[in-house]
Image (tube, rainbow, N blue to C red):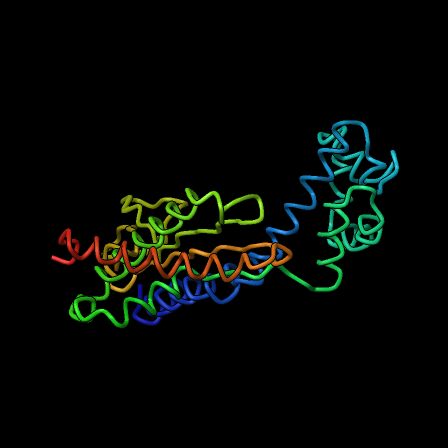
Length: 252
């Protein structure tokens, strides 16, 4: 393995890592995916009950045929972006108000808003003098734990949390080493001294524990005042949970 190939593999790994927060896990991308799942799960409920007309569909619509016979490859091949966008107007005219509402929001690009729990936690941590003296790796660990605890706290607040709220979380590591000598399909294999090894065994960049996690709460802004109540509760619980983490010596 020459040095150029080695550097290229490192760049590939880092670039892929950076694509997740900027593209694959972008707040708008994840928000649309959530609304899509809400819509389709409701549609399939009606199809399963034999009441596809309430979802705005006919008995021979491709979605109905697929649901009734998913093993048929021809039915599966019909499921693409054009089918969804071509069917969206039918969902907008559905008898089910939940389907109609979500379909209308998707069509008008009126997506559900969200609160970024991680960002709000970072804002609180930035004013904490103890946090300023903690290294980046441990800081990330503390913030991630605080985010998880805060969301769990909010889920216990029945006056705030309900079907109108959705918690979106996803952890992403720079690289998960397999360290299998001789090569493995789930690792980046490089040749060193005539042996095939995992790149993490020789690259300090790839072997680093770099990671990030998203912690977001999407909510239905049709619920009056829900967004403000959520943000206030998040900030309040972040302060409490961050103080607990530092008091318990997580930074030590």
